[in-house]
Length: 181
Image (cartoon, rainbow, N blue to C red; front, side, top):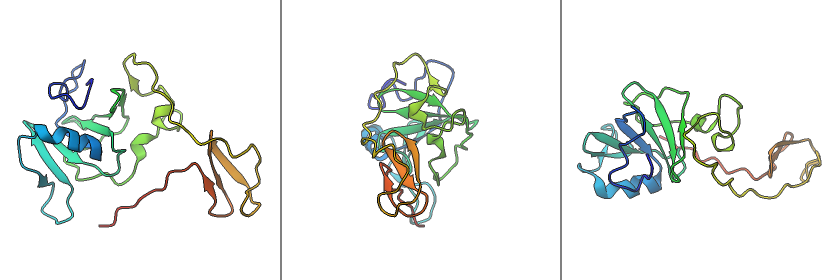
């Protein structure tokens, strides 16, 4: 799968992986929408159901828990691959049933080998793509272990990402948005 914006490539992988469903972030969902062969529909009859449509036999479903430029391709068997908009593909160790109506966490962004963010390791990457550019991270607050807000102990998660174990202070973490149903 070389480019999620190309009409002929969204079904084609270099091996025998054949997706039946794409869980798509907002940007990818909108980018593929002009190729849809069905009207946009809800996955369930419930009024809060996520939007989906078909491109021939492939269901493309909006997945708010994904970054807007990411997609997860799912086979009938539940094998899944995370695809970045820059065509880097990761084979997920998780089985995701194709009849899923929505993901409720971002577990797929964690590598089970090293417990790091999936983009910061090579364990699950498929193919010989050059490593993606690392995301721009805020600079390190400091190497100190004292919280600037309360003086408590700071836990460093990586370059530019820290939080306090004693209060709500954090640096470099993206806020988590929760979906309420």
